[in-house]
Length: 117
Image (cartoon, rainbow, N blue to C red):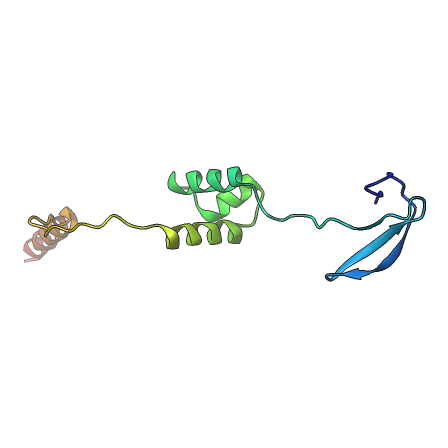
């Protein structure tokens, strides 16, 4: 670790400030703390994760591709979904279409009953 002021590597411990170790350079007597590494991912990585999710990739595959935890991806998507405001309709719905699967399954069931008898 180098002194931010003179670049010297000779330092000694000089107390703790806000739960972080403080150091003093032996050459220039400058006091400094070590910068904490940021685990915060960039906005670009988050945007890419959202795009991958919307394209149909799973949390684990997104995590493997971006080299981050799938739990992190899950929490990003969850937070994004909670903040998302869905479009709302003020007018009444006049026509509702049912899924065709119900009709298909019912017809299939009737055909099977007829074949058995």
